[in-house]
Length: 222
Length: 267
Image (cartoon, rainbow over all chains, first blue to last red; front, side, top):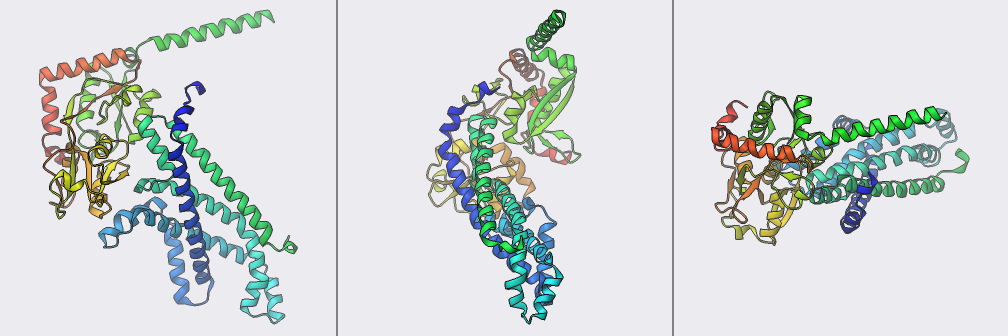
């Protein structure tokens, strides 16, 4: 079985795969940054007491979480133009990933904030700390610690979800595998190589998350 | 101890002989023995093969496949795959015959064997009615984006004959290019003319038109395909087409599925 495995052709297609890796890394980096911002804003709106902010945030989070990402991508790419708004495919893809992950990140952060013990907050109130000070010194330092593992998980999901962008003609890692398959009919070689590169991206992300967890968390918490 | 060893050696030899026995029996006799002809088609490729309103596989190539199964006296099983999955499905033995709107290219023939072409189509350029393009030269410009299907003959031909245009490759059947065209993501599309003419009635009337001149050299043949080792089946498929061409079944199929769109009422 392995004797049929054609490394020569994989090597021949390496420039294409590297283009794909670069594109996927770029899409992921931009989408993750934007999704974090979206998520933090959505979460802030979601937990704020102001109704005009809270209800739109709930609507956004629930709407995104209840629909498949592929449907969202197809709607943005094929649906929106008929309503009069046309966005090129790369931007559509980043927008879709940002909106999708943002909703999940908002919920992850909210869960982290909710996990902080009531008693700590009460202690903060009785020490005379105001809302911003409580957030800064009591809630966020503790919340960050518990949110980093699920945030890493969400970002890994985002990287893998970016494969769906190949369906709207974005050239990224999965598309380079599809291209090699369509030209050489070697799906085993093509998609194993693609899987290998996704794994590399995963381990980079994981290393970054481990590092940031060590840096960001107050040691006293654990 | 020695006895046990002997038994396992005998077993190994028997199993090996049994397995080689299977691979010696040709695909054709295997199909007859199994009582089922397995055909891989591309999902959503009207008028060649698609799932109709009733959820049944239908189309010109499904019609021919049904004819083959009837002639063999076996049941027909249609398996539908995405374009990329077609050749792997055939190679892995999931299907006996590949019945897709596939051109027998020399590159593809390195992996699978093609029967004699059963029809010839032509890649065409299509665009919106409102667009100003009339000649092929109008489309061959750096500011024009052309949509094609990834891995299709149209993709190769577009790259060859429209070298200056920007090419975007889509997946998921010919409708995707029309969809992208109507959404304004591409300015024109390249696909085989029969496939385009067939899906046009599904879109708003007069929204899409074909350029008069076809793209590329002459005709683009389509063929059924089998595995390299299914030589007997390959000869049988060729004989089948010889037979239906002389008894009129071929013309009936072509005029129903490919020359008109009357079938849209029933499927």
